[in-house]
Image (cartoon, rainbow, N blue to C red; front, side):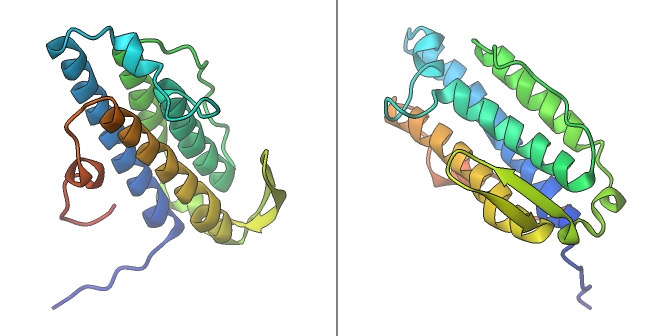
Amino acid sequence: MSRSLSLSMYRLSVPALVRGLGILSGYMDKAAAFAAENNIDPSVLINARLAPDMFSLAGQIQRASDNSKGGIARLAGLEAPSFPDSEKTFPELKERIANTIAFLKTVRPEQLEGSEHHDITLKLRFASGVLKGDAYLLQVLLPNFYFHIATVHDILRHNGLKIGKEDYIGEVGGEAG
């Protein structure tokens, strides 16, 4: 017998964000090992970017962190922790990711109940306006979060790491939250 699970705002967000951040943490391990094996100064990878007007690898991780913790806090009516954008090493980036995951794991499903109806005011460089919580989650928060993960993947791949779609997708199976 199949059990039916509803897709709550919590189930659509927190488990996916935690999973994506875990994938980023794994990328940091792979990048650190790659740098050591190939006698590359880690700062070369940490400061790498795909284009001059894009964030570096560190900046992409910082934005993924800010996007996930800030977005969930906005939906849940919580105060997001503030992290300075000062990470310069793989261990520091991993610590930021771990701290972001730790915050997300404090959010309980009931804190996001009804958040699909909340008005979320956006003030982005490229767009502003008011969205309902569900539209914000599905049209802004998750796509933006995955953009930063994909960009980290692309920066590392462009710099020689042997990573592929299976690394980006991660382990598949089980229930999502």
